[in-house]
Length: 280
Image (tube, rainbow, N blue to C red; front, top):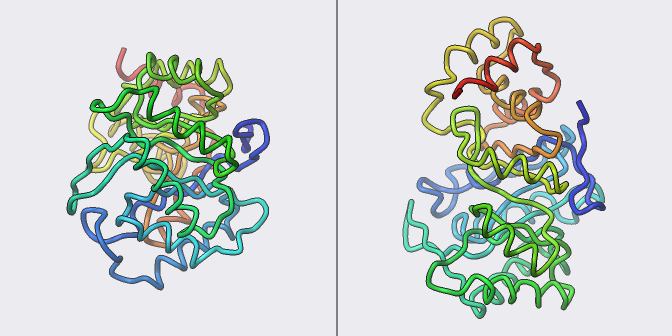
């Protein structure tokens, strides 16, 4: 299995990244319970060879980006910081799209400041806003890229038609949709990303709340490998497509180390077949 991926052809990263959403308070709102623990997790991730750190201005809001900068700036040359814009927060657990060009412009400028960057390596549009024309929102991000504030553009929470419309306007290097062994709703997007050599970054790769239909085969494989079910779920994602780049998040060093170790697990053909065809 290839353990690296070139996003946009020039951002070479290992294929298990880190999602920094959980480095906040309950409901992804406010400061974390233990800021020092979060700093340790981020630094340990880099020590373990994680090269993609995924965050967003809406995580906290703003808390996650500030923690990433505090822990890792000045960033090692091999570390890629990815952030997102296009969601606003009204309270814990509340998320609202805002695709107005003026909001996206302010969001990118804010992320640049908080992350202490002159250019965002990967900016992913967090979610299309049904109240704003798709092309208006993406057009603003294209302008910001042309100004040099963004190196590469990605999409998040999009369908196939939206990906097609985006690709007509500008190069897109990644798609971040919900996807895991229990949720195959973006199967078609994964296949398209593979055919077009776009990175696919699954959010919720470990199915918050626990696995349902995949629980038994995951448990069986975990016992064979002396691993956890979460590690098997991540190993399946890595085997699913060479453009897959899971970003499991945690505020625990122990869970981080467990997640990253999944890249060393190779599933048997039988194990893969069982999980591949779980929904047939």
